[in-house]
Length: 97
Image (cartoon, rainbow, N blue to C red; front, top):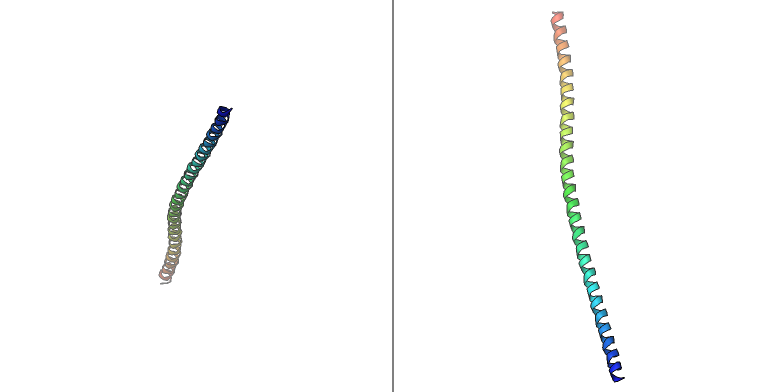
């Protein structure tokens, strides 16, 4: 009976130790998972920031190029109209002479 009581106490101690170890292992697993999640989020933010910067640069270049193209076409049209008006004026002046 004394042996049974000691065995029961020892069994209870082993159960408590196993439960403590399991809880510590679970806590360690959860902490590793949190660290991994933080790393994944950090990497995703870095990639998002890099992609945003790349797209901003791309669109600035595209908008600048488009603005230059529009300005060139407007200037070309304006010059043509001025040249046409000048040529008509010159022709009329020569015809009147």
